[in-house]
Length: 84
Length: 395
Ligand SMILES: Cc1cc2nc3c(=O)[nH]c(=O)nc-3n(C[C@H](O)[C@H](O)[C@H](O)COP(=O)(O)OP(=O)(O)OC[C@H]3O[C@@H](n4cnc5c(N)ncnc54)[C@H](O)[C@@H]3O)c2cc1C
Image (cartoon, rainbow over all chains, first blue to last red; front, side):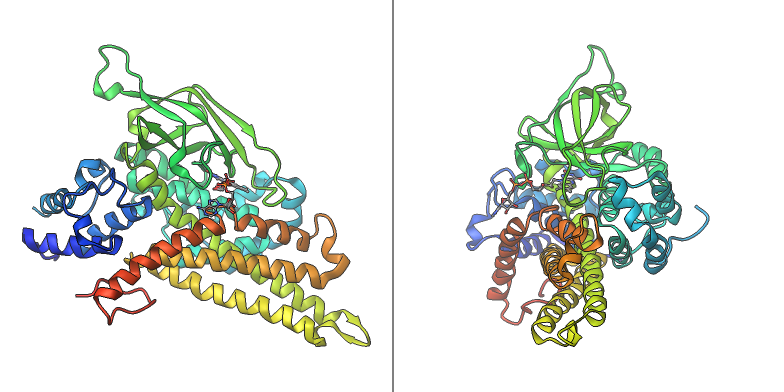
């Protein structure tokens, strides 16, 4: 069984992962990660695979919408939705 | 399929006598393709529920290594067919998986990978092939069709593949599609001949108003290059790393065999110190490449957080080891190493290719530096985080 995390816990875990891509955490808040160029192609692959492993969720082909992964908030929301 | 895939050594033994035939034909003869298909190697990246015989990445890597000892050209079939199977298994709609994967697993269909274009080599995001919804008025979602226009270059085994995973742009968003050879608007033309990988049956794929049903979209717009192709490239790079390792091993064995039997100056070549320098450097690089290949395969099997980093180091090190070993083998064979079409000459030409495909050495250096910086950022915040070894996130 994979634990279901509260919003804040999801947020801090996703943030922890994303911090490897920036020198200043402020670069993540409210930033468009994919369309804004913070995450490269390889980083996007790493993010999806990290979310699956970290939260025990499965990202399907129809989950691949930019809107699900483009901001810290949307990623948190996406993970929460998947965990329900 | 009735029997499990062969072990790497079994497949290697089966193919070794065919090396010269494959090279001379500038193609992989039909019979050899059948041998590979019958062996189950083409089913290795397909889940069992779709008729596959899945192997771990370590096992698949070893198959690639064994095949490359015979023919790097043939090994590249495992690279691209594996990439197509893995991408479809992961990102194609269920209907398409059910329809195509069992036939790809059996080898009835061969898959090729179409990313490169004139405008887009190392810079994959620069593709110009377009994907446009092309639906007659009144058509329902079930009949949705996309139109593809563009030219894809250098598809390994494109000359004989039955289907092609191609990447196109819908507006500024990239998207993958599975195109079949018999789709309207598809023309396959053999590519210009290359000196290395000369039997890899390279083709250019012309898509001219090619219409494909929407259920052959792989991934979603925005994620074609960023997820589907880039994910497949990790597998591709692992295959090229293991293929390079096989090539390097073959070179080391050949130079050890030759220098221990060839006599000059009253003794064996291998007893000369400068010769030992060349041999030991080649062996050292080859053994180091093996460790990095194994580490990368283990990281992929464990879905390690740093698997991309490990795959990059393996591909970089192994393709360089292949180059070092092939150059040393050529040097130590003297004139015999320059015989046109001979194995040593082939290894030199094939080793060159290993440093270009699936990301050139310089592109990979660029990406590895980026990955290293990411890891450094984690270490900076968590001083006990290890420098290298794959480890999960620090609590
Ligand atoms: C035998 C063979 C098989 C192939 N099979 C396939 C296939 O099946 N499918 C497919 O889609 N493609 C295939 N390709 C194409 C291959 O992927 C490209 O050749 C490769 O991506 C490099 O692109 P390019 O040749 O356009 O070189 P370019 O991108 O023009 O690069 C040329 C050189 O510039 C330097 N360079 C490039 N980028 C950087 C950087 N960021 N930093 C520093 N230096 C850099 C490197 O030295 C590089 O070698 C194949 C090619 C060959 C030779």
